[in-house]
Image 1 (cartoon, rainbow, N blue to C red):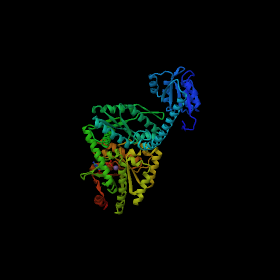
Image 2: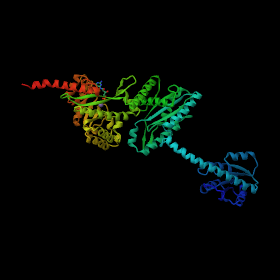
Image 3: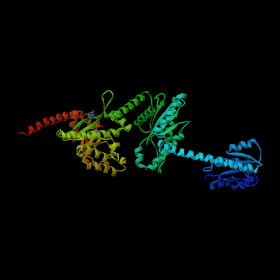
Length: 597
Ligand code: G
Ligand code: MN
């Protein structure tokens, strides 16, 4: 609707069948120099409103088979024209007619007979009021636009739900309320499982549509009042006031059910698996950050239990969650202060005892000054998204150390464990190149150890893309190792097509190779697989001479383990390498002696 200036000719819509009191108004309005449109039924009136810029509607309370009250309600709910001023005219002077008219949304109810001058003045007054209202609204729209821009920063683009920061702010308000009125509050973290796979299969538009459906279903599942937010790509959070703490699992089931039904996704029907964690206020924590953190830890716990699991904090789990949280902050602090260390374990060639490589293991120093090993902190670093930063740090340090070892005269590679998330990053190759460049290290001095999970073609978009990724690394001269072989689900046919160099047999096989004939047979066949793929095979976790013997007999190329050396800091590595070299020479002497006549 256009703006109504004082000098514009305002348009008045008269709704009447020619018999009612509004009919008289038409003539009076025309005389007051307004444009007049006429409708004699509700349908007619609504259609005129659709197609014309109407400034005021003057309508009888009854006309033909329609009535003014119902029609007024219809106008009020009509998109785009709902705010046009409506005046009802009745021939009956009754209070309930006036009240019914105002209830139906009319701006005023006039009682006929009407005085011409008063009608003209009232129409004028209504138009003036309406103009002021619109000016006000325009002002509000401007402020509204600013708010909308702010909202876009605070809300998730796919779903319009509050993002993490906004959700946390809402949660703080809910906490204040819950504290005042003394009721418990549940905080749920819901993670969509296999999200990487979904993203690999479906395009961004489909994924966004999926998120809208998820958001709708969660909103529909709300009983009473709840706050829903999106924490990150794969995680949603719900804050739900509860009547009693005992209702917590009930609330979890409620939201789980909402996502259990299949989703329509690009002509497919997809069932989503979820992991849900929940924490409870005031029982588990007093503030938003810790409640979300605890619910997140509980969710990770649920994820480790399998698909479609949920986990509500209990006393034992609460301790576990606290431990995870404190380890997470330990890792963050360590990254900040570089309180991280690499320990190196030599790898020994079984044929002659020569050290061909040293593998770098990451260690984090804890508060007490002790060192925390990767088995403890890596699952937590992975859950909290810190793995990539740890990996980058390890890569940088290992390259620097490789240069110092090579400069000290040792002829070996430094092997670094790289997590799938880092290895599959678009920028991994260019980042690696710049690290090599920065340390002036030739690619041949570096070995990358990745597990089977990092070699899934899906992570890269296709097998071809994975092959290209590996080929680039190969071109740099970097050695590529498949770590912990036998524990994943590699497709051997895929491996056949990858330019790998080394296969490392997991220590759980090696540990039993000398004691269990079945395991010996398995290890022998793993070694055969490696050889037939054209790879060198390394056994890890060798602790005893008889284990090394078994591996050597089965054709294993090299081995690592406590038998040869424990992982040691760089400062001790020189001595350790020299000792191993001594041992090699000593072992070689009898052979040399035997060759003598
Ligand atoms: O995931 P990965 O296989 O890279 O982990 C190796 C871990 O095993 C390291 O933390 C390392 O300290 C440890 N390790 C190395 N050699 C041995 C060994 O001979 N026996 C045992 N039990 N652990 C080892
Ligand atoms: Mn390794």
